[in-house]
Length: 272
Image (cartoon, rainbow, N blue to C red; front, side, top):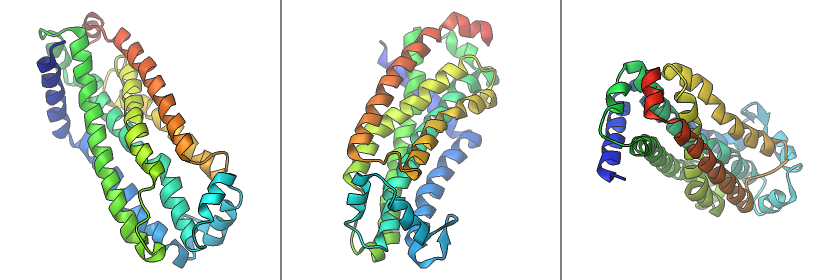
């Protein structure tokens, strides 16, 4: 494989994306809202009548119906600390995965379907590269961008969570080991899941909006994880996060293999 060709394709895609405000703005706004503002809302929860439509007493009642492992972990904290830890450490964990999924899927939609819409894909397909090099180059740019956005979002969250809740918690409490595993092991796999799904969608879509609207279903599994925690079916323990990452990596391999099978130069030229 020609690494220079792969790198050139990835750099070209990154340059194009950075010039597209419709792609860049959602990627920038999401971490600012989720991990810049929400930590302060959670930190103020013990002093507010309600937060997010839920009374603090209702939050504590909710904790009483959580799995035993989570109740054991929460017992280490005071009543005022428990809502903060529950929200910042556990409830926002599945929402964090929206960052890599959204970044990789939006960029993949622009890289594949967006190029067809801009009438630039055909020129790229006639370059002296193999299908494999072209495919890998177009996967690399969204995945690397998703990793950068996730890392920046995580650092922002660490700073904001500790700053907002430091007075109530009494010391630095974030990140936990579970979050380290989530960022290092699960986030890259989540980015691959969003990317691989969007590749399959974009190859058949006529434009960026078509691909993005259909591909937005990739966030549904993350919402199911969130609802699973709210209902007490499961919680983000270290073991659960490790299994989640493993499942995503296996799914990525299958989806990327399927994407490589449909990514054929002749087929794409015929559709462009």
